[in-house]
Amino acid sequence: MATLIERIVAEVSTLPNELQKEVLNYVEYLKNKIPEPTKEQRFLSLLIEQGLIDEIPSEAEESENDEDFEPILIQGKPLSETIIENRGPK
View 1 (cartoon, rainbow, N blue to C red):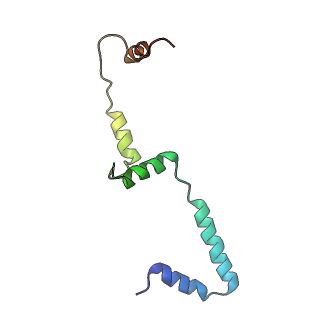
View 2 (cartoon, rainbow, N blue to C red):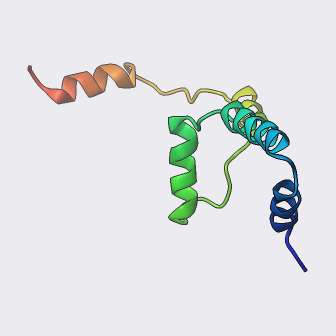
View 3 (cartoon, rainbow, N blue to C red):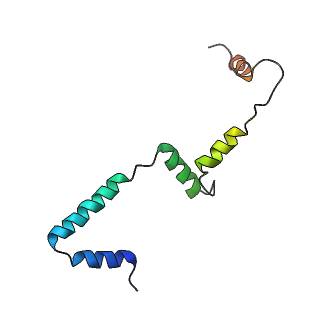
């Protein structure tokens, strides 16, 4: 049984040249309509390929986590000040 792509190619090859050009133009239009992946999307895809994560978290999951965020209260000076002090003089 032919795959969908094979059936489409076979069907398009039977069309007159002008209609084949229209199909080609439409395919090019669809190709250009697909946005390039962002750096973050490429990075997440790489993590999946390397087996470091199983799936890309949805934006809805991320925003839900943000809503539940409660900062941890610590005693003493802010952590950023401690980090700067530990770096030493410039």
